[in-house]
Amino acid sequence: MSTLNIGDTMIRTAMRKSNDKKIVSPDLRGKHGNHKKLDPALKAGVKKHIESLPTVESHYLRQQTERTYIEGDLTLATLYRDYKRECEESGKPFVKACIYEQIFNFEYNIGWHRPKKDQCSTCERYANSSTVEKAERQSEYEKHVADKTKSREEKQRDVSIALQDPTRVVAVYDLQSVLSTPCSEVSDFYYKSKLATYNFTIFNIANKEGSCYVWSENTAKRGANEIGSCVLQFLTSNCKEKHVTFYSDNCAGQNKNKYIASLYLYATTFLEIQSITHKYLVTGHTQNEGDSMHSCIEKEKKRLLKGGPIFIPAQWVPVIQGAKKKGKPYHVKEMDQSEFFDLQKLSNDIGTNFITDVEKKKVKWTEIKIMMVTKDEPDSLFFKYDYGDDIPYSKIQVRNNNVSLRSNKRKTRNENKQFSGKLCPAYSEELKISKQKKMVL
Image (cartoon, rainbow, N blue to C red; front, side):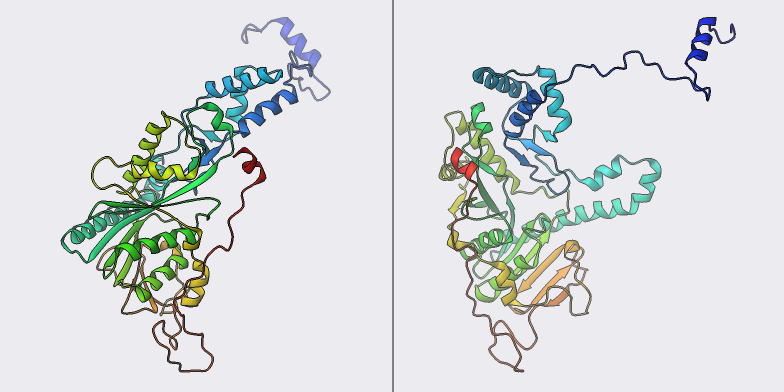
C-alpha cells in the first residue's frame, strides 16, 4: 500500500463496489436525472428568433460550404439585445445571453462576414498537409499553380492586344452578390423577408467601361438563361465587327454549359461578331478587374444607407449609377422580362451534339479551360483543356453535317428544320413570390 501511496479505506471501498466479475462500478457522485433543463418553449423562442434572420450564401464558396452569412454589421450581442427586447415587449420570458450564444453557435452554421475573396481549397489543403501528404500532392499542386499563372498571363496578354487593336474586346463578367430590398441599417429590417435584386456586371478591361444589368427575383431567376441574355445585350450593344474574349469563374450552372455555348454560336451567326472566346479562370483564383465594380457598389450602398433605407428594387439603379466616382460611370440597364430568352430551347435549335467531339471522345465540360466559336465555322464549337497557344483546340460538331445554321440546303429527307434565328422568351408571366414575403413587403 505504501508503494502505491493508498490507504486501507480505498481498498475496502473498491472491494465493496466490485461486482461478481470483480469490476468496480464507476463513481456516481453527481450522476442523477434531476439536472436543471432549459424549458423547450424558451429554446423554441430563441430558435425562432435566429431563424428569422435573413442569411445569404457565400458568393465565392457556395459550392464548397453550406455555411450561410448574416448581412450587415450585426453582432451576437446585438442579436441578443433585439431578442430580449422583443420578449419584454410581448411579455414573454427570455433566456440568458450565454444560453442564446450556445444555441446560436452549436445548433446553426451561420457566420458573420461573407468572404470577399476566393479561398482556394487546393492551396489550403496543400498548405495544411503533413510532409508526407505534401509529397503525394506535389504534382497536383504544381499543376494547379502553373494553371493559375498561365491563366493570369493569358489574360494580361489578351488585354495588351486589345489596347493596341480596336477590333478586340476583352471583358470579365460575374453576378454580384444579392442586393436585398428593403435594405437599412436599422436592426428591425434584418428580421424581415426581403426581395432579391440581381446585378450582373461586365467590365471591359481595355476601355475600363462597366456595364450592369439589373432585375429583381419576381422578374427572372439567375441561371444560364439570365446570364446568357445579359451577355447578348452586351454583345449587341458593344461588339459589332469585334473579336470578343470573356473571362469568368467556373460556375457550371451559369457560365460553363451548353446553353452559354449555344448563345455564343447564335451571336457569331446572327450578329455581326467575328468570334467569341471564353476563358475560365482557375477555381479559387478568380479574382479579377470586375470585382472592383462590386466593391464600388457596396461602398456606395453603405454610404447611402446612412441617409435612409432602400425600400424598392428601382432604388438600386441610382446607387449603381453613382457608385463610380472617377472615370466613366457604369452603364446600367434595367432588364425587362421580355429580354430574357430560353437558352435551353436555343441549344436544341442550334444543334443536338454537345457531348462528343469529332474524334468521338466524350467532352469533359467541367475540365474545359477555353471555349471558342467563330463566324467562319458556325456549326462548330472549339475547346481546350489547358491554356497556351501550343495546345491545339478540340472540335465539337454541334450541328448535323447535313444542316447548317446558314444553309437551307438539304441532303437527306430526315433532317432538322433550319433554325430561323428567332429567340423564344424564357418567361410568359411574372414570377411569384411567397405569401409570407409578400405580406412583409
